[in-house]
Length: 258
Image 1 (tube, rainbow, N blue to C red):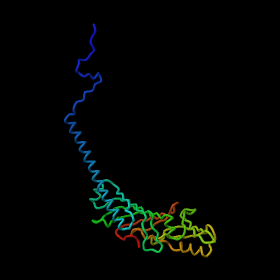
Image 2 (tube, one colour):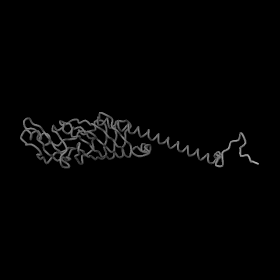
Image 3 (cartoon, rainbow, N blue to C red):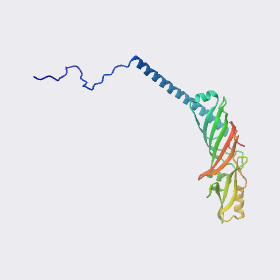
Image 4 (cartoon, rainbow, N blue to C red):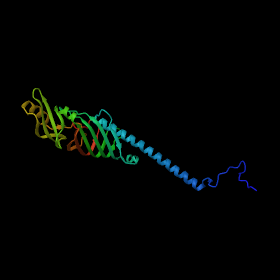
């Protein structure tokens, strides 16, 4: 006699490893709903905070552009989370601003700032978007050798030693004359050229006159926000970095150094 192993027709067979799912208990269901609701609230809070940060960044960029007359609106990043609580207190803890091609105004030797990076602590903005005030500021102005050359009337390039640049002028029949000069910070937010040494060619009177016109007088940086003070100058492969610091700095229309 044989025993049948066939399953009854019409009844599904799941095998020995079948798993039967049971609906969640009311307690577990409440926990799932609570977690999902909390997650939705957190996502919503992040979105609202990001919108507030974007508005603060936009207002700060507008105030900076108005004050510094930059051709393009600078990029602005507000640090810290949440931003809403910072705005409620009336002060942003830290803001980074990056601007390009700040024009030089009110000078016979205009030297634009190729790139300006500003870190502001304790930034407060006014009700309108035309003013911003920071408790302390650190900034770095990058001056490309191309812009420095145009301002000085001599070809400026990186020197052979740290803190030095080469200045070259060309004269008919004589050719190029190059001198090496140290670069340093001078009072009044100016860049000074000192310790001039002949590096190539003969420093005949015409060349001496041209280089003297370019290097004798320190070059003022006229397009830096008021309240910033030049602390140091360093040379790089592509240009000069000027480091500034300041306390209680306000950005508003026509706020650059004159």
